Amino acid sequence: MNYKAHLLIGLSANALAFALAAGLHLFSLNAVAANPVLVAGIILAAVVFSILPDIDSSKSVASWIFRLVLFAATAFFAVDYYLTKNVFSLYKAAGTIFLFALHFAYAQDGKMHRRFPHSLAFGALACLAVFILTGSKLAALAGCVAFLSHLAADGRIFSSLKFFSKPRKFFD
Image 1 (spheres, one colour):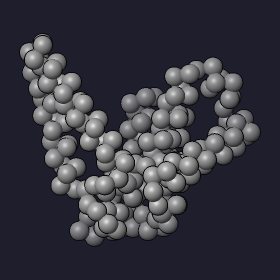
Image 2: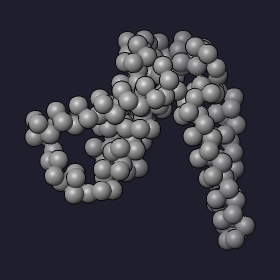
Image 3: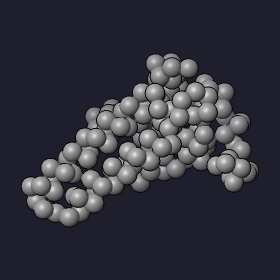
Image 4: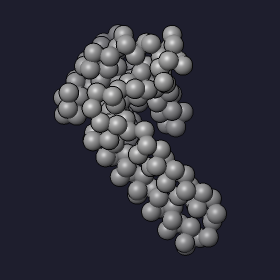
């Protein structure tokens, strides 16, 4: 399935989930709509998490965006180090270069790319990271719905559970 289909499915699933949650009075749509930063965060989480599991495919849009963000971050930290001589900026630049190399070594093509990023554990960790970084339960929920819709569209919901039952075998 291509990224456009995953985006459509992820955004549709989020629209349905948020309409259902608002209908059950779990939150107020008016309160969300009054906060444009929150709306942008929810939409961004839904878009990113719709394609996030494919980050382990070297030719995916998610990988391309990841590499672009890493390149921009490396450049930013390098310029920051040049201007401020702050050694932590140099460490951050080295860290982004390390992440780029790690992604290059991990990402594969073909059907073999469906490994850890196509697991519920990866989705849970990514959603937890969104919540910790933003403090927004709704952005984390949007990410969770989009991630699960990606796994469902790929037919990977039940096979992704194998990570919990046999972690050693999963990484082999």
